[in-house]
Image (cartoon, rainbow, N blue to C red; front, side, top):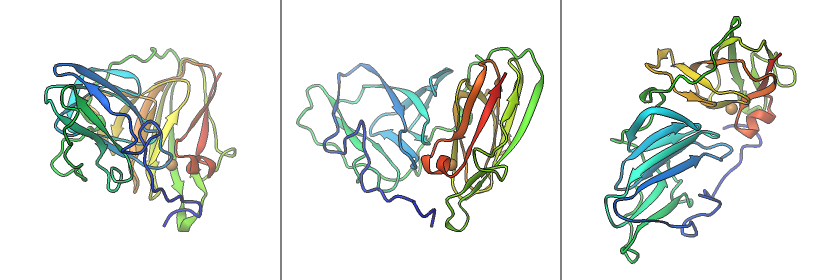
Length: 273
Ligand SMILES: [Cu+2]
């Protein structure tokens, strides 16, 4: 399945190293520890958890939530960033790892080592997410930090397609960049974009130059939209609606962050005059 240049990966890394070469994180009992995660993978989503601890999500793509959201694990699409806190209240040696199938075994794990427990052995990572409370976009309460719109209301429907029959073509409204239609905007416009994913793969859509609110996900409104600059649009007819204020003049890339999909054409521009 997939395109002709679909890669096969046998190694997954944290800060460029595969376990056991990953750098241990040393903590002391009682500390509050902040983790700043970025999914720098080209193709894979990851589900990050810390054995023995819960994680508090505090920021989505660098934007603060009104209050932290406590979860067991955090799914992340390529290009997404999350800031997490955990309380170091269970002395021992634990693994921070990806619960996705095969990922921890491919190296995506690291030790969290409490002072005084350097000789302890961590428990084996547990694959899968059954019974875990997972982070989701609709669990967070975003702060409404967008610049107030002063211009027109604009809306755009962007259909994401491609990859049919192993093709490497990926399109927005049936067109491949540079032939896609740019979003032609004026500074101050209030812009709504509705994505619909007609393909068999998820697309983490990333806008340069400004952040956006995530208004709805698969047809359900978010109670308090979170603010991001990358949003994962689920495969098989997933949909997402976002809103931003066009305040930063220029030609901004607006694209799937998976490099193979970008190269296949899934890019448009937000052209703000
Ligand atoms: Cu994509």
